[in-house]
Length: 111
Image (cartoon, rainbow, N blue to C red; front, side, top):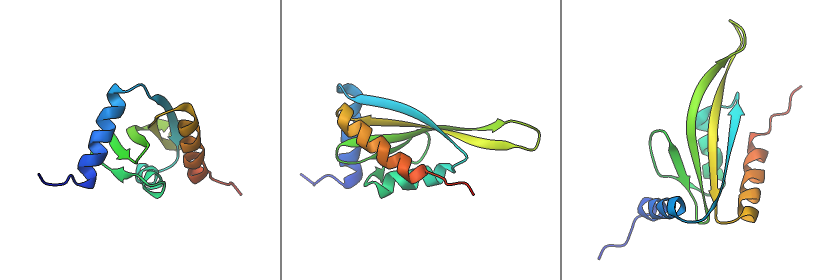
């Protein structure tokens, strides 16, 4: 029997999360490119599992998804993107830590 690749292992973990009793939280990020949000998952230790929506990123104890992206129009000249991100973790403590670390990466300081 051949050993499983990293993507196969991560996909199995992701499927386990779908049927297991896990903690889930969904957030919306505005004004940050979808690609950057994916890189932040990778910087936290995840590997990308899928190549289209929902973009799935799986790590050892958690999974993140970039669920959707849309453009929000405030005025005819002021438009921003809004990206929905979903986090899955084995318990509330792990979920809170994941979201804290992810939000740190998405922090933008105005000037």
